[in-house]
Image (cartoon, rainbow, N blue to C red; front, top):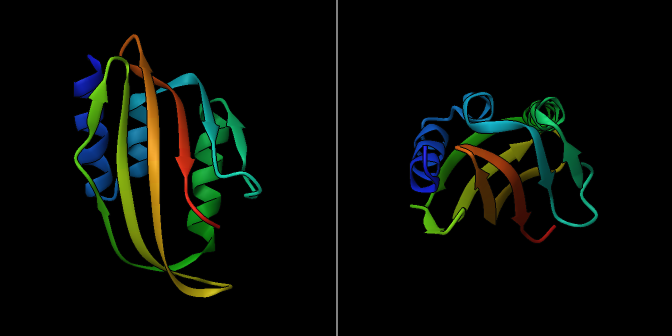
Length: 119
């Protein structure tokens, strides 16, 4: 898959709530994931670590009220999407979330991701 195809597939799976499927299908085994500075999972290296990071996040969530992912903007082997969610956490209560995600694709797989948001 080229970068546009990977981006479109990621957006499609995320819109269906299949984020774990997206990781399993689209991420390189050696993915490097960067969250916002100071977040509990600021750096995750490798597909298993990224899966663990996502499973941990889901374990902290009481309810996802809504979520949306923008269409991707693709430039070369990079693409970006914006994500908006309304989430109630088990500790901390309900809060809206907005972030920008930037992904790098190589040989049809996502090799890097970085998320920008305020904590």
